[in-house]
Length: 106
Image (cartoon, rainbow, N blue to C red; front, side):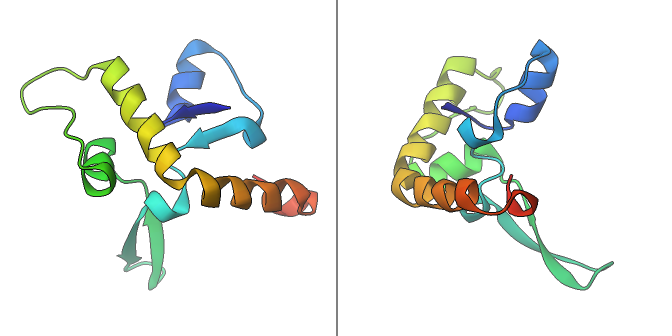
């Protein structure tokens, strides 16, 4: 299982892909996303939360300090902690998605 935050851009930069069923992207997991009202559609939409904010809200871990460059190891550890905080529910969701008809997967 590949765990991270915003993995699509990382994988694209590396010219790699990974099976969707083995990806746990904390930027795309609905319970970790923020709900915003769209004026265009007049509906709520889910948008990714910043890793720094998510990890503070859910794990009380402070990362990406103002004025300092991002530490990739710190970001990776933070994303893994987020995943672990929701692993049971997340894996239950993934089992349901894998067992769903193909048009509902991913």
